[in-house]
Length: 293
Image 1 (cartoon, rainbow, N blue to C red):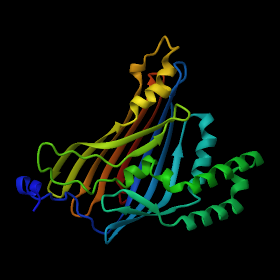
Image 2 (image 1 turned 180 degrees about the vertical axis):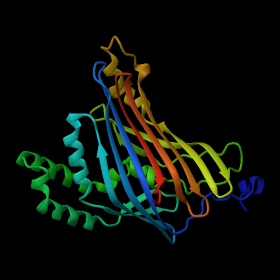
Image 3 (image 1 turned 30 degrees about the horizontal axis):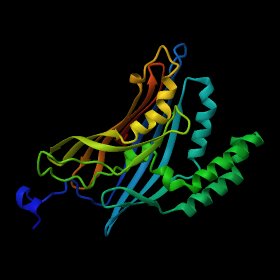
Image 4 (image 1 turned 45 degrees about the horizontal axis):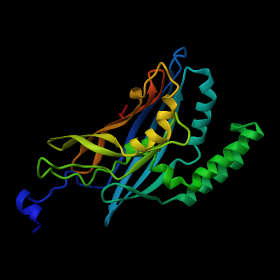
Protein backbone atom coordinates (compact mmCIF):
# COMPACT_ATOMS: atom_id res chain seq x y z
CA UNK A 1 0.00 0.00 0.00
CA UNK A 2 1.33 3.46 -0.89
CA UNK A 3 1.85 6.11 1.78
CA UNK A 4 -0.86 8.31 0.23
CA UNK A 5 -3.36 5.45 0.30
CA UNK A 6 -2.46 4.74 3.92
CA UNK A 7 -3.20 8.29 5.03
CA UNK A 8 -5.98 9.32 2.67
CA UNK A 9 -7.58 6.10 1.46
CA UNK A 10 -7.59 4.54 -1.98
CA UNK A 11 -8.23 6.87 -4.94
CA UNK A 12 -11.64 6.08 -6.42
CA UNK A 13 -12.38 6.96 -10.08
CA UNK A 14 -15.43 9.20 -10.32
CA UNK A 15 -16.42 8.00 -13.80
CA UNK A 16 -16.82 4.45 -15.06
CA UNK A 17 -16.43 3.82 -18.79
CA UNK A 18 -19.03 1.72 -20.57
CA UNK A 19 -20.01 1.23 -24.19
CA UNK A 20 -22.71 3.61 -25.41
CA UNK A 21 -24.20 5.25 -28.49
CA UNK A 22 -25.80 8.66 -28.08
CA UNK A 23 -27.29 11.25 -30.43
CA UNK A 24 -26.55 14.89 -29.63
CA UNK A 25 -27.40 18.36 -30.84
CA UNK A 26 -24.45 20.76 -30.83
CA UNK A 27 -25.24 24.46 -31.20
CA UNK A 28 -22.32 26.80 -31.86
CA UNK A 29 -22.42 30.59 -32.00
CA UNK A 30 -19.40 32.58 -33.20
CA UNK A 31 -19.33 36.31 -32.38
CA UNK A 32 -16.94 38.79 -33.99
CA UNK A 33 -16.42 42.33 -32.67
CA UNK A 34 -14.45 44.32 -35.23
CA UNK A 35 -14.44 48.04 -34.59
CA UNK A 36 -16.41 50.57 -32.59
CA UNK A 37 -18.55 51.61 -35.54
CA UNK A 38 -19.32 48.10 -36.78
CA UNK A 39 -22.14 45.96 -35.39
CA UNK A 40 -21.27 42.52 -33.97
CA UNK A 41 -21.17 39.71 -36.54
CA UNK A 42 -22.85 36.45 -35.54
CA UNK A 43 -22.46 33.07 -37.23
CA UNK A 44 -24.45 30.12 -35.90
CA UNK A 45 -24.42 26.42 -36.71
CA UNK A 46 -26.45 23.51 -35.41
CA UNK A 47 -25.20 19.93 -35.83
CA UNK A 48 -26.86 16.57 -35.23
CA UNK A 49 -24.20 14.10 -34.08
CA UNK A 50 -24.00 10.42 -33.23
CA UNK A 51 -21.25 9.53 -30.75
CA UNK A 52 -20.36 5.87 -30.19
CA UNK A 53 -17.92 4.75 -27.52
CA UNK A 54 -16.31 1.47 -26.58
CA UNK A 55 -13.40 0.54 -24.33
CA UNK A 56 -10.82 -2.07 -25.26
CA UNK A 57 -7.98 -2.83 -22.85
CA UNK A 58 -6.43 0.52 -21.88
CA UNK A 59 -7.88 2.46 -24.83
CA UNK A 60 -11.14 4.22 -25.66
CA UNK A 61 -12.47 4.22 -29.23
CA UNK A 62 -14.99 6.82 -30.37
CA UNK A 63 -16.83 7.17 -33.64
CA UNK A 64 -18.29 10.63 -34.24
CA UNK A 65 -20.77 10.85 -37.11
CA UNK A 66 -22.13 14.13 -38.45
CA UNK A 67 -25.74 13.38 -39.36
CA UNK A 68 -26.83 16.88 -40.32
CA UNK A 69 -25.57 20.47 -40.10
CA UNK A 70 -27.33 23.78 -40.70
CA UNK A 71 -26.18 27.36 -40.25
CA UNK A 72 -27.30 30.98 -40.25
CA UNK A 73 -25.85 34.49 -40.29
CA UNK A 74 -27.42 37.91 -40.83
CA UNK A 75 -24.16 39.35 -42.13
CA UNK A 76 -24.20 39.31 -45.93
CA UNK A 77 -20.42 39.22 -46.24
CA UNK A 78 -20.32 36.03 -44.12
CA UNK A 79 -23.00 34.10 -46.02
CA UNK A 80 -20.71 32.81 -48.82
CA UNK A 81 -18.21 31.66 -46.18
CA UNK A 82 -20.97 29.93 -44.20
CA UNK A 83 -22.40 28.15 -47.26
CA UNK A 84 -18.95 26.92 -48.25
CA UNK A 85 -18.23 25.77 -44.69
CA UNK A 86 -21.45 23.76 -44.63
CA UNK A 87 -20.55 22.21 -47.98
CA UNK A 88 -17.07 21.25 -46.71
CA UNK A 89 -18.60 19.60 -43.64
CA UNK A 90 -20.22 17.12 -46.03
CA UNK A 91 -16.85 15.78 -47.24
CA UNK A 92 -16.05 13.51 -44.29
CA UNK A 93 -18.91 12.72 -41.97
CA UNK A 94 -17.21 10.03 -39.86
CA UNK A 95 -14.23 10.21 -37.54
CA UNK A 96 -12.85 7.17 -35.74
CA UNK A 97 -10.69 8.29 -32.81
CA UNK A 98 -8.44 6.44 -30.38
CA UNK A 99 -7.93 7.85 -26.86
CA UNK A 100 -6.04 6.75 -23.80
CA UNK A 101 -7.70 5.72 -20.54
CA UNK A 102 -7.73 9.33 -19.33
CA UNK A 103 -9.52 10.51 -22.46
CA UNK A 104 -6.62 12.19 -24.28
CA UNK A 105 -6.84 11.94 -28.08
CA UNK A 106 -4.03 9.73 -29.37
CA UNK A 107 -4.82 9.24 -33.05
CA UNK A 108 -7.37 9.34 -35.84
CA UNK A 109 -7.81 5.77 -37.02
CA UNK A 110 -9.58 6.34 -40.36
CA UNK A 111 -7.25 8.76 -42.15
CA UNK A 112 -7.33 6.61 -45.32
CA UNK A 113 -11.11 6.96 -45.40
CA UNK A 114 -10.81 10.76 -44.95
CA UNK A 115 -8.46 10.99 -47.95
CA UNK A 116 -10.76 8.81 -50.06
CA UNK A 117 -13.80 10.94 -49.20
CA UNK A 118 -11.85 14.08 -50.10
CA UNK A 119 -10.74 12.71 -53.48
CA UNK A 120 -14.32 11.75 -54.32
CA UNK A 121 -15.67 15.15 -53.25
CA UNK A 122 -12.93 16.95 -55.18
CA UNK A 123 -13.87 15.02 -58.31
CA UNK A 124 -17.66 15.36 -58.00
CA UNK A 125 -18.44 18.61 -56.16
CA UNK A 126 -15.46 20.95 -56.05
CA UNK A 127 -16.34 22.83 -59.25
CA UNK A 128 -19.97 23.40 -58.25
CA UNK A 129 -19.14 24.69 -54.76
CA UNK A 130 -16.15 26.79 -55.88
CA UNK A 131 -16.79 27.92 -59.50
CA UNK A 132 -13.67 30.12 -59.71
CA UNK A 133 -10.49 28.22 -60.58
CA UNK A 134 -8.35 30.35 -58.23
CA UNK A 135 -10.68 29.43 -55.35
CA UNK A 136 -10.44 25.76 -56.29
CA UNK A 137 -6.64 25.85 -56.24
CA UNK A 138 -6.60 27.64 -52.88
CA UNK A 139 -9.04 25.18 -51.32
CA UNK A 140 -7.22 22.09 -52.59
CA UNK A 141 -3.91 23.42 -51.24
CA UNK A 142 -5.34 24.32 -47.83
CA UNK A 143 -7.54 21.24 -47.42
CA UNK A 144 -4.81 18.77 -48.31
CA UNK A 145 -2.37 20.60 -46.04
CA UNK A 146 -4.96 20.22 -43.28
CA UNK A 147 -5.40 16.51 -43.94
CA UNK A 148 -1.66 15.93 -43.66
CA UNK A 149 -1.66 17.46 -40.17
CA UNK A 150 -5.19 16.37 -39.28
CA UNK A 151 -4.43 14.64 -35.97
CA UNK A 152 -2.57 17.66 -34.61
CA UNK A 153 -5.24 20.13 -35.69
CA UNK A 154 -8.05 17.95 -34.28
CA UNK A 155 -6.50 18.25 -30.81
CA UNK A 156 -6.82 22.05 -31.13
CA UNK A 157 -10.47 21.89 -32.25
CA UNK A 158 -12.74 23.23 -29.52
CA UNK A 159 -15.70 21.14 -30.66
CA UNK A 160 -13.74 17.93 -30.16
CA UNK A 161 -12.27 19.18 -26.88
CA UNK A 162 -15.89 19.54 -25.74
CA UNK A 163 -17.13 16.26 -27.26
CA UNK A 164 -14.23 14.07 -26.13
CA UNK A 165 -13.06 15.48 -22.80
CA UNK A 166 -9.90 14.38 -21.04
CA UNK A 167 -11.52 13.77 -17.65
CA UNK A 168 -11.52 10.04 -16.90
CA UNK A 169 -8.64 10.28 -14.43
CA UNK A 170 -10.78 12.35 -12.07
CA UNK A 171 -10.76 10.69 -8.68
CA UNK A 172 -12.58 11.19 -5.43
CA UNK A 173 -10.49 14.03 -3.96
CA UNK A 174 -8.45 12.38 -1.19
CA UNK A 175 -7.58 15.69 0.50
CA UNK A 176 -7.97 19.45 0.23
CA UNK A 177 -4.86 19.72 -1.96
CA UNK A 178 -6.25 17.60 -4.80
CA UNK A 179 -5.76 19.34 -8.14
CA UNK A 180 -6.54 18.31 -11.71
CA UNK A 181 -4.99 19.67 -14.90
CA UNK A 182 -5.50 18.37 -18.42
CA UNK A 183 -2.53 17.66 -20.66
CA UNK A 184 -1.15 20.60 -22.65
CA UNK A 185 -3.56 22.00 -25.26
CA UNK A 186 -3.04 24.68 -27.88
CA UNK A 187 -5.12 26.88 -30.16
CA UNK A 188 -4.30 29.41 -32.85
CA UNK A 189 -5.17 33.05 -32.19
CA UNK A 190 -8.10 34.40 -34.18
CA UNK A 191 -6.89 37.98 -33.81
CA UNK A 192 -3.06 37.88 -33.99
CA UNK A 193 -1.19 36.32 -36.89
CA UNK A 194 1.36 33.71 -35.86
CA UNK A 195 0.24 33.48 -32.22
CA UNK A 196 -0.59 30.15 -30.58
CA UNK A 197 -1.94 29.88 -27.05
CA UNK A 198 -0.66 26.98 -24.91
CA UNK A 199 -3.01 26.14 -22.07
CA UNK A 200 -4.36 23.48 -19.75
CA UNK A 201 -7.84 23.01 -18.37
CA UNK A 202 -7.96 23.15 -14.58
CA UNK A 203 -10.75 21.64 -12.48
CA UNK A 204 -12.48 24.46 -10.58
CA UNK A 205 -15.76 22.82 -9.52
CA UNK A 206 -16.89 19.27 -8.80
CA UNK A 207 -20.26 18.09 -7.50
CA UNK A 208 -21.84 14.64 -7.22
CA UNK A 209 -25.50 13.78 -7.00
CA UNK A 210 -26.74 10.20 -7.32
CA UNK A 211 -25.51 9.01 -10.77
CA UNK A 212 -24.53 12.50 -12.01
CA UNK A 213 -21.12 14.13 -11.89
CA UNK A 214 -21.02 17.89 -12.53
CA UNK A 215 -17.63 19.46 -13.27
CA UNK A 216 -16.27 22.77 -14.51
CA UNK A 217 -12.85 23.57 -15.98
CA UNK A 218 -11.09 26.88 -16.69
CA UNK A 219 -8.05 27.43 -18.90
CA UNK A 220 -4.65 28.18 -17.42
CA UNK A 221 -2.58 30.04 -20.03
CA UNK A 222 0.95 28.67 -19.79
CA UNK A 223 2.74 30.93 -22.29
CA UNK A 224 1.18 34.24 -21.26
CA UNK A 225 4.49 35.91 -20.29
CA UNK A 226 6.16 34.75 -23.51
CA UNK A 227 3.29 36.08 -25.68
CA UNK A 228 3.23 39.37 -23.80
CA UNK A 229 6.90 39.95 -24.67
CA UNK A 230 6.78 38.67 -28.26
CA UNK A 231 3.45 39.98 -29.55
CA UNK A 232 0.85 41.46 -27.25
CA UNK A 233 2.73 44.40 -25.68
CA UNK A 234 3.77 45.62 -29.14
CA UNK A 235 0.14 45.82 -30.25
CA UNK A 236 -0.73 48.21 -27.43
CA UNK A 237 2.38 50.41 -27.59
CA UNK A 238 0.84 52.98 -29.95
CA UNK A 239 -2.70 52.69 -28.63
CA UNK A 240 -4.04 55.65 -26.69
CA UNK A 241 -7.63 54.45 -26.27
CA UNK A 242 -6.91 50.89 -25.16
CA UNK A 243 -4.84 49.29 -22.42
CA UNK A 244 -3.01 45.97 -22.25
CA UNK A 245 -5.13 45.28 -19.16
CA UNK A 246 -8.08 44.71 -21.52
CA UNK A 247 -6.46 41.66 -23.10
CA UNK A 248 -8.30 38.44 -22.26
CA UNK A 249 -7.94 34.77 -23.13
CA UNK A 250 -10.43 32.34 -21.64
CA UNK A 251 -11.71 28.81 -22.19
CA UNK A 252 -14.37 27.45 -19.83
CA UNK A 253 -16.14 24.09 -20.03
CA UNK A 254 -18.96 22.62 -17.96
CA UNK A 255 -20.27 19.03 -17.98
CA UNK A 256 -22.92 16.82 -16.49
CA UNK A 257 -21.82 13.18 -16.82
CA UNK A 258 -23.60 9.92 -16.18
CA UNK A 259 -21.18 8.42 -13.64
CA UNK A 260 -21.91 4.78 -14.47
CA UNK A 261 -20.93 5.10 -18.16
CA UNK A 262 -18.96 8.32 -18.66
CA UNK A 263 -21.68 9.50 -21.09
CA UNK A 264 -22.12 13.26 -21.43
CA UNK A 265 -25.64 14.33 -20.45
CA UNK A 266 -25.05 17.96 -21.42
CA UNK A 267 -22.08 20.29 -21.76
CA UNK A 268 -21.08 23.80 -22.72
CA UNK A 269 -17.92 25.61 -23.78
CA UNK A 270 -17.17 29.33 -23.78
CA UNK A 271 -14.12 30.77 -25.55
CA UNK A 272 -13.03 34.42 -25.45
CA UNK A 273 -10.10 36.13 -27.12
CA UNK A 274 -10.31 39.89 -26.58
CA UNK A 275 -7.89 42.71 -27.32
CA UNK A 276 -10.36 45.35 -26.10
CA UNK A 277 -14.11 45.96 -26.00
CA UNK A 278 -14.31 46.62 -29.75
CA UNK A 279 -12.00 43.84 -30.97
CA UNK A 280 -12.85 40.33 -29.82
CA UNK A 281 -13.78 36.84 -30.96
CA UNK A 282 -16.06 34.60 -28.90
CA UNK A 283 -17.43 31.08 -29.28
CA UNK A 284 -20.31 29.63 -27.28
CA UNK A 285 -21.15 25.92 -27.58
CA UNK A 286 -24.08 24.02 -26.15
CA UNK A 287 -24.20 20.21 -26.32
CA UNK A 288 -27.39 18.36 -25.42
CA UNK A 289 -28.82 14.91 -25.88
CA UNK A 290 -31.00 15.01 -28.99
CA UNK A 291 -34.65 15.33 -28.10
CA UNK A 292 -37.08 12.72 -29.38
CA UNK A 293 -39.94 14.33 -31.26
